[in-house]
Image 1: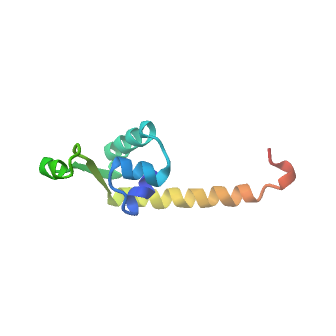
Image 2: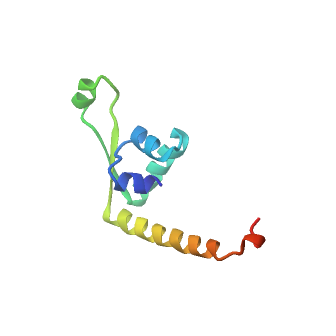
Length: 94
């Protein structure tokens, strides 16, 4: 969800939290891991820009080529999981 949110234009933590409905305690560790894995590239905004907005600096993220490939694979796995789950008869579902 986080990787997808960044891929469609949500660039910083609070924006990603709003888009996904996830908490900060979930989003920020995910962003850090995705950045470390090379799926995202993070950068701090300029101090002057933050001061103009009267707020702390934000860290902006963009998806990398590897991140797009990883996202494509995740979407395919999700589609396969949905297909499998939809094949289970309703009487067998827990």
